[in-house]
Figure 1 (cartoon, one colour):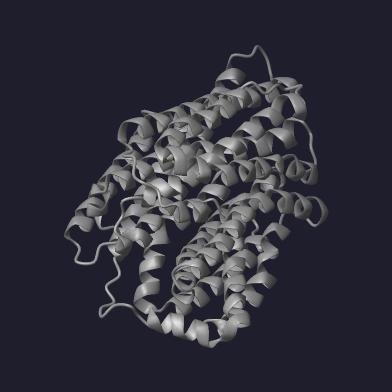
Figure 2 (cartoon, rainbow, N blue to C red):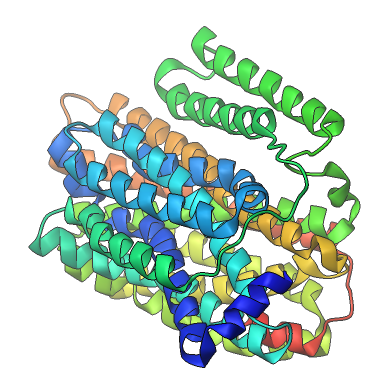
Length: 490
């Protein structure tokens, strides 16, 4: 750690903050690529003639692999050098993005999105680790983390708008090509600016069995959930996927308990708020990822919006998030995070309940706007409070691990939630079509599609209610450091 700080300070004030710009830009790309493709999905679906259940894998492959290997990436950075892992990650991310844009089939694109997610999992924890060792603890680090947090949250918001502009004026492939020049620029800047770093450990034991087993278990579970509506929930193939997933989960837990250097030291979950916060994170992100997925499809395929207009229609969400996120830390100082986490997910649930009433002949102001405003306010309050809750009462040596696990839960929850809710939407739509007399016309097809969205939003609202119940029952109120609360609002 001393080496990182010394080198960072030696580089001088200007380059000291240039390092932050380089690292934040890399994180911006990673977050951007979760949301940028949502607006491009209808164009990709048309280009490769993909079903809705297969289409969701373009999002899921990225988030699932990213989440599955995030902790491994962080451990690898400690073992083999942060700078080295960051450079490998950014190079691989650029190559994967180029190949994404050149994809010739839906299957090829899904596989390459997985590769892109793996690159992100190598790059992101290394970048944050470099931030932590480059800037002195206290005000300097707080400012750096504030910039990091603002850029990361801005990436999700910018992704929808940028995705719309690129899709409409240059084509959907440019949603991936845009990463290539940025990756090259970040790689060159990182070579010149980032301090050298070797290893924090005397060993190089990487828990590959743990990383591979948990990722494979999750992928089999998600695949089973995606295919179940078509094959049948009790079909032999569906049960086989679920059975193999359970076996791999069992192997993962046994491995973590016996490994000398486990990927996730399971005793960290003995800290009550870490266990409760991660349990909350799963249903929260499950509902949110699906909201972006289904509303992006609705405003383009049902309301007929162009990609750019779609991107602009989502801007009310980050504005609402900003309003809530700047106020919540002050409220947490007065009443703590637990009351907020009992109420904020219910605001998100009300947004999803509102969106569950979208109409085939709807319009933005009546059917979408109120739901988006509620969604942003609820999200802003939830994520600020959840971050504080997940790190309260945690030993300083485990704070990085606690943050990494929360991030992993976010990605896994999103991937699982999207699989579950896409399956529900598909089943509902197919059921509607089957009950029709005669071949469905365009209006009947759109009605079936919207009915599927209704079912998904209702279940997503139930996820949020479940998260609020978890907060009420399991969270333990801790005294909150006002400075930590101020930093978390970014």
